Image 1 (cartoon, rainbow, N blue to C red):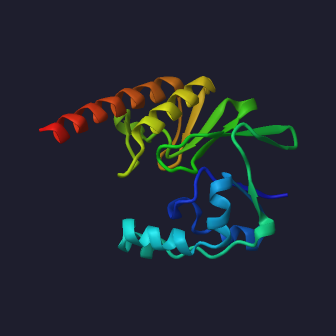
Image 2 (tube, one colour):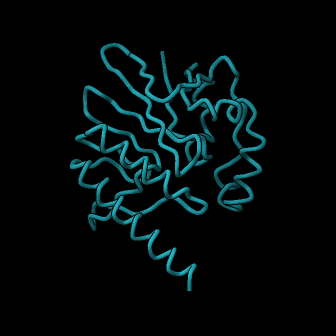
Image 3 (cartoon, rainbow, N blue to C red):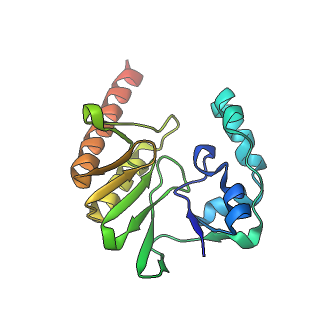
Length: 188
């Protein structure tokens, strides 16, 4: 059985999901709030066009996925595939339907866009969440990720890195500083 596990349904993650379902018969696991948008992606597409404009057009309009191929998976639920267990942890902030996926046996957390992106060549973690990021939810989600005690972090945009907790802590400090600077600018 093929599975496709989505951290969230933004089109840079989910636009080609229908193709995977068609080719492999995959089941798609997603946060329950994302299910209706995969089955009927019209609202997702309109929002993507509004925010991303030409980039959305370049990525392409998502196609609907048959409802029997989409599984809503709740916070803390785990799925087993052979001897492996994947657990889904609700991590809003970047998106209200965002979740990270913990591969328990390997101590790997797939963070989607919940923990920034890592540029190994300069050892930098960079924000990947454009406004309107829900900063307090985002920071709470980073705390949740730390609580998973991952050894390895798999960033959506930039590969895999060890020292996961160090990188998540660094990104959290960066986001707190971003909040402080933003608050200061808004008061000025």
